[in-house]
Image (cartoon, rainbow, N blue to C red; front, side, top):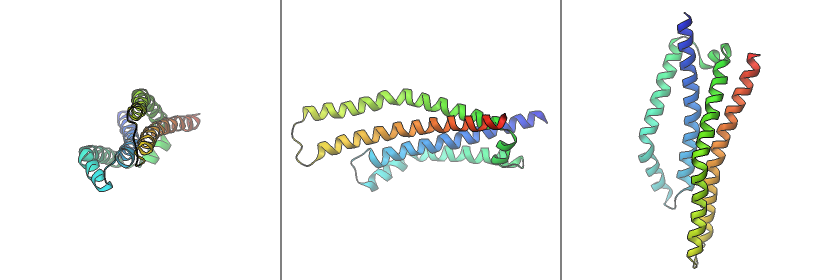
Length: 169
């Protein structure tokens, strides 16, 4: 019986972690879709689905399979977490680690992207149609929002850890 409880706990952790990280990944993809391109919105939406369809299918399948397994044990995820706050703590730690890792890998890229826009603008003197300002705004907003998403994910992980740690005590 203890083995079943441990397996249920593992699947609960996997489900919650997958849902949280998938939401933040989707936000990052939408950020790139809405702000990261000059094309018409319809074209950007088409490209988004073309590039993200497999990701959406795989994430949905993982969430459905994990949900079915948790439901098969006649429990809801909220009940599972209420009975075992360790799940919330573990998910919190995993989300923080993912956030820190994502920040460490994307922060240099975001800084380089912003610097490259300023460098390109420095070499091109004539912008009569306001393109210069649009390029700067787009680069700063896209990259800043990307960082905000990752920091929000990390903060959520810290919050989950602290809340469920209090429940354990």
